[in-house]
Every structure is written in structure tokens, then in C-alpha cells.
Image (cartoon, rainbow, N blue to C red; front, side, top):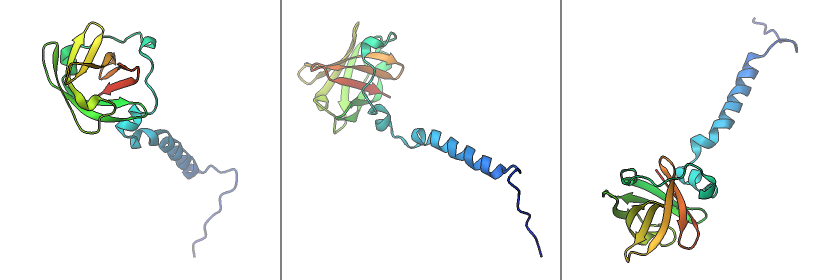
Length: 148
């Protein structure tokens, strides 16, 4: 017959430390592992552009490719920016917030990237906050975020 020894209160319990460490590790990583891109982008309004010392106008080559446009509190959609020397075409996917479904052109100016609709009307102006992230405003003053 096997007799199991009962540890006294003073003996260390390595399994307890391992369980506590695993629980702490999982609780710290759970948000980053399970969050979607939209949740990360829409978690709150971006920092206003005036507060970002690094905001700048991107190069046209930085714009080419697929981006996610988000307006906090209203939704998001994917947009493809096609190449050009200082401007190009925009192909929005369905469900874009505001008037961004009518986006057709983009243009790089000294003040940033301007997105225009099919009639050439300005929809938004954005500046590069960091690589892969542009922040700006619509003509109505609503915040807009473009991120890869």
C-alpha cells in the first residue's frame, strides 16, 4: 500500500507558483492575442495630430497597397491605394463609413495625403503618424485613421 505524505504548511508548492505564473502571463497576453485589428484601431480616438511631433506627409510609395480606414464609433473598411508618382486611384471595399465609399483618388501634398471622391471633392486629409499609420480629419472635422 502506498502512503502519500501530506506536505506541511512550510514546504514550498512549486505547482502553485507555476499556476500563478501561468495565470498572470495569460491575463497579460489575453487582450493582444484575441483582439482583432478593428478592436485595436477603434479602441479609442487617435491622439490628435497636433500632439504628434513626428506627423509628416508620407511619400507616394508609402501609400500603395491595402489599408484599413477607421472612423472611431462609426466603423471601418478596407481600401486599396493604387500607384502613381504623387497620386493614384482608391478602390474602397463595401461598408466604408461616412462618404468614404465614394473615394476614388488620393494625392500627396506638403500637408499630407488628401482623399477625394468621384467628383474631386476633398473627403479627408491625413498625415503619417508612424510607419503604417496615418491620422487626420474629414472636411467635417471627424477623426480618420488609415492603418496597414
